[in-house]
Image 1 (tube, one colour):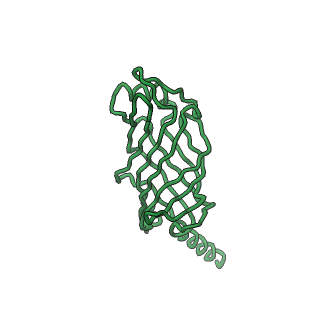
Image 2 (cartoon, helix red, strand yellow):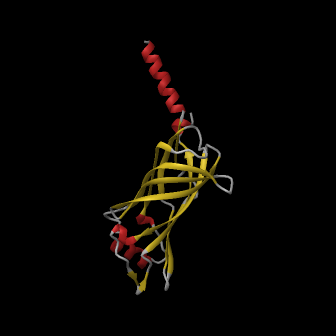
Image 3 (cartoon, one colour):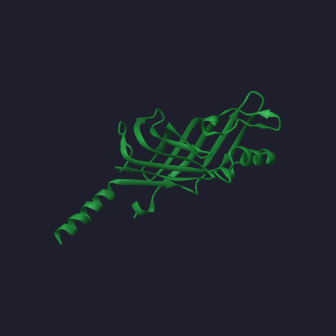
Length: 196
């Protein structure tokens, strides 16, 4: 009986010390894939991002690494819109092959938290970015602001298409860049399980 009560108290303490956030699907989230080529610039845009962040502790703190943390985000590539239907089809079918590889994914952990000049945090994460079925180790920085119940994240990083076995395409006779810039602007909210 005493062991059972002790186990319940320990589990309660551990869950109380954990923070879990999910992408707020009702918010105005945006992911951009930007090609900045000499002849033509274009963007593929979607709001179809999902995922979660989990760490021990009640809030982010400067100077902390969170070795037990988990980050997982995925973006639905079939929903990317470049503004031109033919280009969308070529990008999805011929290069990203979204029927076989429908998502771009990032899985990692928080390795550092720094104060941002804007008053929020710069969160550093180490993990693996996967697109087109090929995963590469990547360190990603995100600007994070919030009040502990919700957070706003922005991040910008580069992905080299040949690293993920994606041929650098020519669309409608115009070459696009082999390096794509990704811009993420999205919101997290405290998971319901911790909100009760």
